[in-house]
Amino acid sequence: PFDEVPGRYKVRDLSLAEAGRHQIRLAEHEMPGLMALRAEYGEAKPLAGARIAGSLHMTVQTAVLIETLTALGAEVRWASCNIFSTQDEAAAAIVVGPHGSPSDPQGVPVFAWKGESLEEYWDCTEQILVWPGEQDGRHGPNMILDDGGDATMLVHLGLQYERLGAVPADTRPGEPDHADEMNVVRAVLRRSLEIDPLRWTTVAQQIEGVTEETTTGVHRLYQLAAEGSLLFPAINVNDSVTKSKFDNKYGIRHSLPDGINRATDVLMGGKVAFVAGYGDVGKGAAEAFRGQGARVIVSEVDPICALQAAMDGYQVARIEDVLGEADFFITTTGNKDVVTAEHMTRMKNKAVVGNIGHFDNEIDMAGLAALPGVERVEIKPQVHEWTFPADDDGTVRSIIVLSEGRLLNLGNATGHPSFVMSNSFSNQVIGQIELWADAARPADEREYERQVYRLPKHLDEKVARLHLDALGVRLTELSKSQADYLGVPVDGPYKPEHYRY
Ligand code: NAI
Image (cartoon, rainbow, N blue to C red; front, side, top):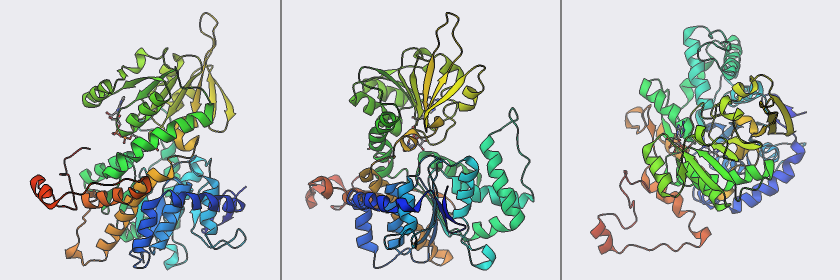
C-alpha cells in the first residue's frame, strides 16, 4: 500500500502529513542554525536555479533541511539513504507541503518509506536523479546532497557502464566482489541505459557538485578523487568540526540508547557493552553505555584511538576474547567483517547485536543466515532473534540482532535529535550555497575543482555561533590586545587548520 503518483512521489501514506507537520514544527524550534539560515538568505535566494537530488535519511530533521533548501530557492527531489530510516509521517508532510493537503499535495517530490526492499531503495535513488517533463526526460539534477554516497555512486557507475557499452553480468555467491546489492544496482543501471543510452552522460554533465554528510561517503569521495575519476567538486560536510565532533559523537550518545531501548527495553546498567571502534561515533557510543551504568569494553585497530579509550577508562580488548562476557555488541567502525558469523555463535545467550556504522557489512548477516540449523524469528519489525543449534551439552542460545545489521539508531529509533542535526545540516546548506555560487562564476574564476574540500573554518565557527543562544551560552570576547597576543583575529577563526578539538 503506497500513496504514489509515478515520477512525482511515492510514500507510505499521505494522511500521516498532519502528524508529520506537527513534528516538523517542533523540530524547527530545536534547529536554530537552519532557521537562522532561512532568515539570513530567505530573501536573496542563493539556491535559485539549483535542482538538488537529496539522498539522506527521510526523517523529521531532514524535512526541516529540505524546507530550508526550498526557502533558499532550490528545487528538490528526495530519497532516503537507508531502507529502514524513513519516518513515514515526515515523508508525507514534505510531499503535502505546508500549504497543501493529502488530496492536493503541493510540496517536494519524495520517494521513501520505512521498510523498502533493496530493489525499491535503488529505484527511489534513481528517481531523484530524473527531473521529469523536460528535454525528453533527460533533465536531471544539477546538485547532489548525499549521505553515504549512494546517489553519487549511481551517477559514477552509470557513466562508467555507459562508456563500457554494457553493464557487467551479475556476480554469484562465492565469486570475487559478490554482493547481492551490487546486482540490484546493475539491474537499475541496465534498465536506465536501455531507455536512454546516454542517460548518465546527460546527468553527469549537469551536476555542479555534491555535499556529503558522513564518514563513509567522504571516504568514497576521496577514493574517487585519488583515482582521478571524481566527476564534480565535492564538499566534505562530515569533517566540519561542527559536524563530526557533534553529530557523530553527541548524536550517537543520544540515539544509540534510544534505538536499543525501543528495540529491546533491555537494561544497560550493570551489564557489559562491547563497542567496536573508538572514532567519533565509538566515543559517543561508549559514553552512552557508561552513562547508563554499563561496563564498557572497546576494540580498536588504531593505537592512538586505543590509547584514548584506555585513558578514558575503558577496557580495550579484542572481540574474540570477550564474546562470552558482553551483553551488547555494537559496531561503529565503517569497516567490514567486524562481527563474523562465528563470533555470533559464541556470544552470550540473548546478547544484543547491532551496528551503527553506515553500511550493513560490519556484521556478517549473510554468514549468520547461512549457518546450518540457525533459526530466525521476527520479534517485531527490525528486531530478530537468531537461535543456534543446541551446544554439545544441550544448551540452546540465541542472540537479538537489530535492524538486520543496518544503522540501528535510524532503524529502531528516529536517528539523532534535531538540535545536533541543525549543526550538521547548517553545514550542508552552506556547502550547497558555496558550490552553487561557484558554479555561476566564469570557468577561469572558479574556486572548486574536481576534488574534495572542507568548508573554511570561519563558516564552521559560524555554524557553532548560530547554536549558542539557544543553549544560553555567553561567549567571552577577545580584547584587541589579547587577540594580537595570540595572533588571531578578534572575530576568529581562532584555531589553525591542524587543531583537533
Ligand atoms: P572514525 O573513522 O572516526 O571511527 C571509526 C574507528 O573504527 C576508527 O578509529 C578506526 O580505527 C576503527 N576501526 C576500523 N576498523 C576496525 C576494526 N576492525 N575493529 C575495531 N576498530 C576498527 O569514523 P566515525 O565518524 O566514528 O564513523 C564511523 C561510522 O559511523 C561510519 O560508517 C559513519 O559513516 C557512520 N556514522 C553513523 C551515524 C549514525 O547516525 N548511525 C552518524 C555518523 C557517522
